Image (cartoon, rainbow, N blue to C red; front, side, top):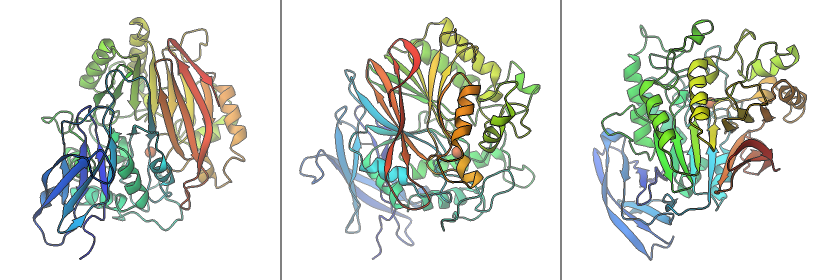
Length: 498
Ligand SMILES: [Fe+2]
């Protein structure tokens, strides 16, 4: 019989005493099938601390999950499943730390475009032994068509076309896309090595997603937007080890993850609750929202009541500005190609937080006026590496920053050198220098590389390393540190350490 565990295993959404364990069965013509599972403190399964039965149901696309409780905080575990005489690969996972924790280290990633490159960053992460979890800031899948419409970037010539070839719109489409991702060996290795904590960006749904639609979504041609969002989230729940933060609200992704006394991690959804992205002058309407009112109220309450040393925002869409008036013409090509300003070159990219200036200003003033210190923003989405200091008046360096922002590059999605078709770390470098001269709040930028961040948290500081790959156009998991910055307790400034 064929391997029935061909999508591997995965774990995610750990708490101090439990973690979701996941697998998926490939058995033809079966409505549903029982599996057994076991979890142990050793990889030989000599010290089993939990076991039981679960069911892979056809209605859940043959996925199965279990949420074993009674585990110890901050502890590494191993798990596996059995069915039809076969045993799954062994997965390794870890529960959230105890309240007394004084050190955490995790990976920060986003933007895994299957047809743009190999997931070498996942392979590199899977080999590491020092990470507590993987924070996924979205674009875990791309819904795109293999030959996308104008305005979206086509894939790279690496022989990895999307399945299905067309843009995902139905439940079956999204299932097929997740199925493809989970057959990738690097995706499987990553999942088998550590738990994931994930939010969503737009491509879990559709490019440019907002509360009522998306760039390529046409109500007269496609299913209603609400049905498409429900299908996308349904397939995501089936294929990822995720806990629904509100069992009564299947749309809800935003939530708080408590990392002991060290940090609260506020995981945001900046896409499906927001108003439609629009250019100025409508963009400046003070009532427009990126978070939606319920999420905003939740976030402000959580920031106010946080007792941990660090307030960490897991923020899919870049919070700091990448636009200002009177930008020198010499930097515009880089900003246009990487979509960090509007396509006409005369305004901000209103698809990111830059398009919701009133709400961003409200957030920054709230942090300043409530003296909410030690705010660290972790962001993805823009496919380049950046480090920013965030201020109410972004370019007034006399002002104390309200937060610092560490932006990871894409796992594979194309950035400046890919789009310009020149060699990495050659002709892009002068543009990076000019960008940092044009933007005083920008302390680091790399427009070419792909990879992931390693975020290291202690009571004294948060230090972030940008781990960059040699290539994503072939399988090669070699990565090295491109830069590292830290922010110290009580001092919201970026300090370069590597
Ligand atoms: Fe992306």
